[in-house]
Structure formats: C-alpha cells, structure tokens
Amino acid sequence: MAQPTSRPTSTPTKGPVTATAQTGLVVYYDSVSLTLLNNTKTSVNLTSVNFKYGEKYLGAARWGKVVAVPINAFPAGQCLQILGVAEALIKPEVCSFVRSIMQFPPDRLFWTQDDFDVLNGDKVLVTCKKGAGRCAFPGLDSLIEWTNLSRLAQSTGLCRRRGWPPAGSKTSSEHVVRPVLTQ
Image (cartoon, rainbow, N blue to C red):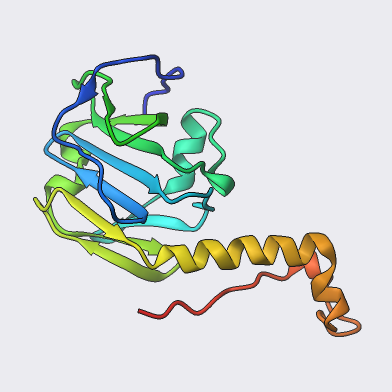
C-alpha cells in the first residue's frame, strides 16, 4: 500500500538519472525506483495516463491520492515517483521538484519484473522494456498543444462561435477535443 509522504525538502540528487534533450514525458527506472518526468515547457494533463503491467493498471491520478498534486495540469520539469519501501527519499537531478512519492514493497515494483506500457486512456503511448532504464514519448507535445487549444477554445467561446456544439446538444464544456496523434 502506498505510504503518504510530506512535501519533499532539499535532498541529495540521485546520480544515474541525467537530463535528456528529448521532450514529452520521460520515465526513468532502475531496480528500486520509477520516476515520471514532465520534460516539456508546459503543464500536461495526466488524468488519463496509466501504467499497464500484465493485466494490472496504475493511474497517474493515484499519486494525487497520496499528496495533493495537480494531475490535470502537472507542471513542467516536475516528477512523480515510486520507490521501494526501504529506499531513502532522493530527488533525481532531472526533477525540479518531486510532487508525490509512493512507496511499494519489492514484489510490487512492476518495472523490475517485465516490460510495461504507458497509456493515454486505452492508447499505448510507449512500451518500456525491462531493464532499459528510460523510455520517452515525445509525440505527447502535440497532445499538449491540442489540450491547451481545447481549453482556450472553450474558455473563449470559440467552439460556440464556430457552431459547436450543434443546437440542442450538450454544452461545449461537456465536450472533449481529442486530437489524432501521428507518429
């Protein structure tokens, strides 16, 4: 079971996790930790991001149940982390701030047992290979741009002015703009 943690304080950085030029979300993992980094220049909505391992799922929103975290607007440069229960809380150098940490027993460190997928809803964004140490999905940048465009369109009434939604249907705030990601 996840153990609640308080806000991280200034701690030593973990050596092997280093910055990457790749943008998007990056997952770093080793034998005792998994770190999800928002390596973009803007906040991202992680509410539909899930880790799938075997037939089980771990949603990014679960970190928000440990400590209040803005999962729907997760800040650029910040991280979410899972550690083994016996591990010291150490902020990886790639993270400007670790917003929430869950601690799991060794048998629940799924990334040490097999490959795992990172999904957005039911769409696989990337398959992370056991032992690889890092996987990234730079295509998320287009999703971020569309997410921000959708918020802007709804807040300014652009959808309504363009005839969306059709008369008699739900209001524009009940509709979700879902971009098509191309590889």
